[in-house]
Figure: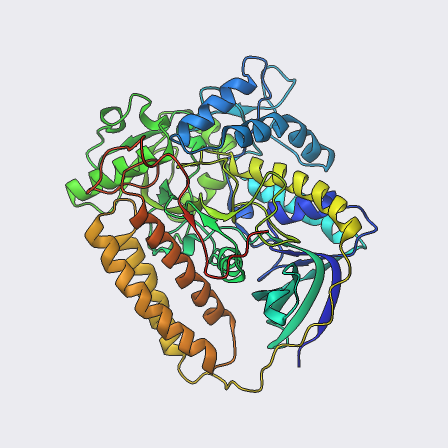
Length: 536
């Protein structure tokens, strides 16, 4: 039998978005943080590049805004972009106040080293060598573990949100969540006055991804099922450079390596990016990923190469210690030879629609970080704007939560999860097969380059899978693999339907049947409205 918990704020997800929000809330609030596995296992931990913010006198707020709008290919919300960029420097100072350590300049001795990545016109990416996300995650986690008002629940997988309408209440605010407890194999009830979804993106819906196994779109799927609108799910960012090696699962090669002079090469050693864009290796990720995909298909090769061996060995080892060590584990010395690379699904630019305070369509429910569609990224995310978004919206959400909690009462009693009408699964092979089938057809039909025919094939297959998974869910006890598959198939359906509605090519969405940009009829987000959507 499951256990019932009560908190003021329930945060589902333990990456940068959820942890920094928790730390900004006052100590008198009772807070719960749920993590699907260990607290540190999140996309944040694996982020190598850094955080973009205007920190140099030669740079400007207006330049950062212009670069972000340009990368977003006409679909960014200009007011949101300005708000985020303007709050950037103060949020870096907040991180520093938490004890975050960034890489300093060697000459002169003062200040922090700033690097440049694709889409940026200035060096404005502050970093901790090539392990910024890891350092950020560890810094925030250390503080969270010290807070007496924060309860940590690891090995917990949220199943569904609890809303008023589901339980016959007139008020449809979010009341908490049902959560699978991996330690007891039962479902607990977590009631809360406010709920924050901070579960990250959904790139595990694709066969090849830079993301860890936990990135299965859980929050997006839960929000959609609860009645939240979802926007721009067709814009999935494929990172151009992931290490190509049979044993190098999900290892990203940061864009900062190209920012420091790394060159993309064909198997014969020829550069090719100048043929695709005047910015060459520093073009936005959508352009670089499509160029690599094009050349791989043209040549029929399994990978291309990224070379920084022309730089001094000491510089490479000091600037990119994580990449140097990881590649060496696989017999690749990046100071002497190029790195074999392939594109892989990396970032979900769309998600649950929120306002500038991270509020969703459901009262008392917030969404922060990669899970959310805020208007910042548009049709493509500029490098290192993601951790910045986590910080800024963690800040605005915390401020709004504190104010709104003044008028939000304790949620009513909720029935516990009913486990009496289901049996233990005797067909786990169904989950395994459906998982593989889903991720493979999403890669083949809804990947870097799409077509009307491919999307239609994907639509037919995802509809069949959704029905199979629904039947399985209603028959057997829940467990992690099935919960993740249920969420992934819902997210896949949203991606496919959104891609079919955008009949043009823009940013991260490229359809060979509609290769041109349509600035007349397609200059707005692709908004998906659930059947149970209830306007406030």
